Image (cartoon, rainbow, N blue to C red; front, side, top):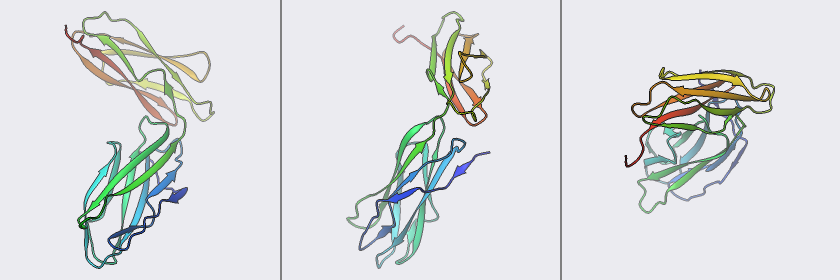
Length: 216
């Protein structure tokens, strides 16, 4: 089940304008929980002008962020809100996500909405990608996983839907370290496969790839 966070710790960046869309704030700072997989926040606004305003474009800064609103055109004095949603995925640490808002008002500059998200520490792989060349032998390679020093974190298992990879999970030097061993059984052509690293609080992904030698 997708878990959502819909909290605001700080609001800032109030945008004042005499005409057109007036946002109460244009920045929000958020601190989600480690179990949250989606971070959401709303940016309310009012059409402070005397004529209808149409939002012609909502552009996010990355594919992991979406921006939605109920409708595009707002009458004079009418209120609305833009909802930003950020999918946490494998991200950790400080993340800054932007949405650019454009309207049909002549000469009106773009409005920038910003979410600053401080993500908690999660499982950390020694590398996200591990590669073999096409035609190479089925050698074993290893990715090391470090869990946060938090008693709530426990390694559960690793999974991969691609049966061309043999995968095993072994304990490392202590309870916070693990080794994922990967052996490709087929290296005759290029392919890539995601490996799910599943803990009881969060799942991350690492990737095995069979790649061609450029220029061969």
